[in-house]
Length: 399
Image 1 (cartoon, helix red, strand yellow):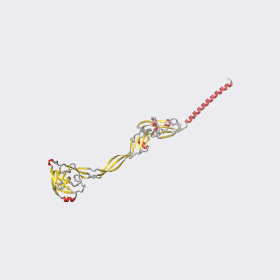
Image 2 (cartoon, one colour):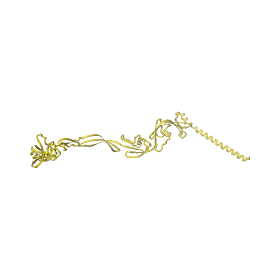
Image 3 (cartoon, rainbow, N blue to C red):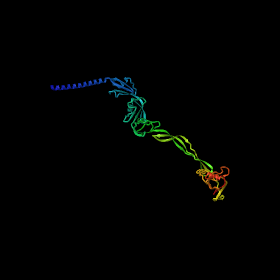
Image 4 (cartoon, one colour):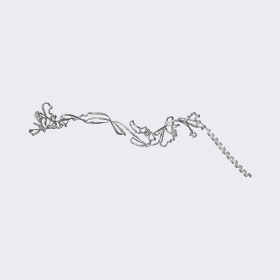
């Protein structure tokens, strides 16, 4: 081999050795650097429930760090070292515990290693989406026996105080949603569905404002009619003995208002202010005996001949009442309307009285004195009554 070629070959071997040496040196330096960094003490915060402890250590095993600093682990406790090598290094101890998890209308017991409410959600493979709510909040600490509620986002209709609006439900109870929307309930107010109902998407909450008030009003007490049998009146005839008068009462109501409208009234008290006076009416029961045809007779008077069935002879007196006054039969007084004994001569019977003329039985008068008086004859004035005085007459009952 000539010298030039040998020199060239030799130089290549030297170059390879140099490169290899550089690489080895770099690896050594890097390893030394890594070893040096790894052995540089660093601050790590250990979180265990509400306990927080920051330590300085060059240890890289999270379990060793935890145990070296006095934390005792249970069989099913878990160490989360996923943030151990971050700038703000953390080691999180998740303790085994039993909690109750609620979602919508369902709830169940969960046993798991956890420190926050978010740990429970993650353990169950659930995620918070827009509008969802977790109570306690995702990063809040929890303890043995706590209740964690997961509210899924939804929408409901709220009807209250004359307005209707759409609200987010997140599967919360009616009571919670009313509080969140500033709806305060008075004692008598009513809500549907019930306050402890967990609303599903699309449901409606209706608030009815209820009030009760006492109100009074005055009402007329109607006149009652009382009837009395009267055997001095002909059957079928009536006579008002007392007109009667209406009374007045005050009625107190309990009124139920719903959203300002009266929907129900209930009587709670009644008070009579003025008593009603009953109207008293006499009802005739007298029935005159039947007159046989062969009893019909004919008589002659100054007014001409007339037929009669019976006749009575006795004393007749006279009387006067102001025009418009009523007789016992209900007719108004007037000449030709006389008083008789209705047991013998029914009201409405046509008569002829000697010295007086044709007339009709309209009032009660015969036999009231027990002195043989058979008729009371109506006159136009007291003077005429005085002129008549007392006379003996014959009363004919006309056919």
